[in-house]
Amino acid sequence: MRDIVDNFSHDLAPPSSKPSSPSEKHDVVLTGSTSSLGKYILEELLAEPSISHVYCLNRSSDAEERHRKSFVSRSVKADFSRVAFLQTDISKVHFGLSGRDNERLLDTVDIFVHNVWSVDFNESLESYEDVHIASTWRVVDFSVESKHRAHIDFICSIARVGNCLSSDTIEEGVPETLPDDSSLPLPLPQGYGESKHVASRILATAADRAAVPGSVIRAGHLAGSSKQGTEWNKHE
Image 1 (cartoon, helix red, strand yellow):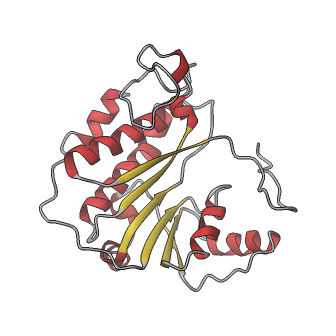
Image 2: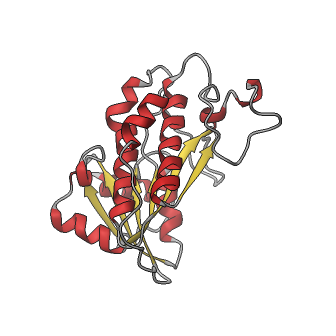
C-alpha cells in the first residue's frame, strides 16, 4: 500500500501560484453520480441554492436518462438545467475530456466530490490501482491545476479503518485524523478497504506537499432511503 502511495505522489510539489478566491456560488464536479449514493448526492446539490452548476462525470452515455428515471421513481422534481452530464474516463489525463470542457471545469469548479468506486469485497488491491486509485491521482492533478484549487470531498468508507480497534497504534475509537497505519483497513486482506486507505493517503500527501484542500468522508453501509417508497440497492 505504501509503495502505491509513493508511486503516485513522489513528484508532488507546491503549486506555483495562489488560488483565486471563489464566489459565493459554487461549481461542483461529481463522479459516480449514477451509483446508489451518487443519485442522492446530486439531489442534495441541486436542492442547495449556493450551487450554481454541477458537472457529472460518468463512463456511461445514458447518465442523464438514468437520473431522470431515478428522480421520477422517487417523486423528485427532475430539473437538470444546472447539470452537465459528461461521458469520461476518470483514470485518463484530464478525465479524457476535450480541451474546451476541461478548461471550463478548471476555470469554474471549486468543489470536487469524488464518489465513484467499485464496491466489491472479493477484489484485490491491485485490481483497484489502474482505474480507481489512478482516478484519485487525476483528481489531485485537477485541484492543483484548477483556478480555485478545488476542494476534494472523497467518499471513503469505514472499511478503511475497519481494523481500528485491533491496532496497537490506536488507543480509543476511530480518529478523525488520517493515521498512516497500513494495518487499519479491514483484514483478510480486502482490496476494497485497502484501496480506500491508499486513496486517503494520496490525498493526505497532496495536502501536505501541494496544499491541496480535501476531506475524507468515511461512509458506513448504505441502506435504503429514509423516505417512504424508495428501495435498497437490489445488488446488496
